Length: 458
Image (cartoon, rainbow, N blue to C red):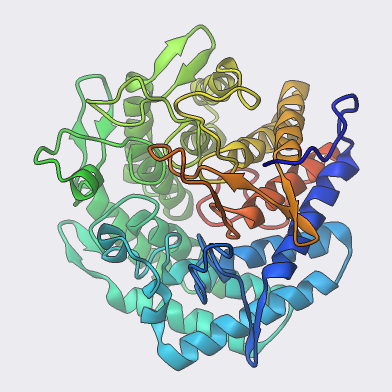
């Protein structure tokens, strides 16, 4: 299914990574759906699913992340016109149908219930973020107006919780912690300190949910345990400890709260979460892998942003920055080494199946290694980023005059092959990763980083 885009006898040049991103944008242009009030991109264009979706993870908002960064990196201002059409569509739909339009295409019940205000997975915060960034490149008061309206809704949706406030009670980064991260970012961007105060109140509430672990540190599953919601388990002993649902992402959120507020309780919480992760890691020499789920799947090791090494590295990255403690830098290196020790990105494993996305696959690795190279200057990381870029180029398919990726997004359903457009799961995010490898080759950092990313924070 994939089509070899670079010769096996020639390693890609830096320009190849940029061209890969450009060709992915060309494919996105080929599936663009134009309307009288802007454009959108379907999540699953070949299946006829996800039409009109505007959120960051699956829909138009995330795709704008590519167009904005590609305009900057390539010098081609036409990508700003693509971004403007997407922004105009988002504004029109929200003006016409309101904030609930955001979740209208989400079909999974346990997700739909918690994403209204989230940064990722369909929520208002992710759209407010991208509209704010879009306004920097393509000034339009409507983008700011809608972003501020969405943020006001998020603020008003907060409800009392033990120790503070919450939104959904699902405390991971895909839910309430992501909302916190957005509010911290928006508070600085718009000069609204009360939003940071609300974020801190939500963080203090999540701090109350910690449970001391026998292996060390504190486990944070939040007010509502995601494993129980997803699998119907009766016991709260089940835990998905990594970034999007679990302790590493919540710990990262505590670290950001400490960074913005100076409250030592948040730093202590972040350190406790890191100690918990270190206590459950499988370590061999200078490499570490992390369990996908405990206690029943301790030997399934995702390498990904969502439930594995890439996402959890963000916690140790930010703690190394904030504390200067060499132990966090050493753990960051162990986690990065763990990915490579499995044979990735070329070899697949139960925790790295045939998926190339930012969320679950190779593109997420590229983000991490490019950032580690720029942070440390260690050529090993640049080599790893190049290898990831080569895999992404080799696995691309040429369709619609550009590049897309056929992948098995769901680990437990390997025969379900799909082509997605969006940022976290599809071509837009993969193209951004190729762009980041291209920039790393030149010693340059990306111009945009979402609020849930610690790498090369601006």
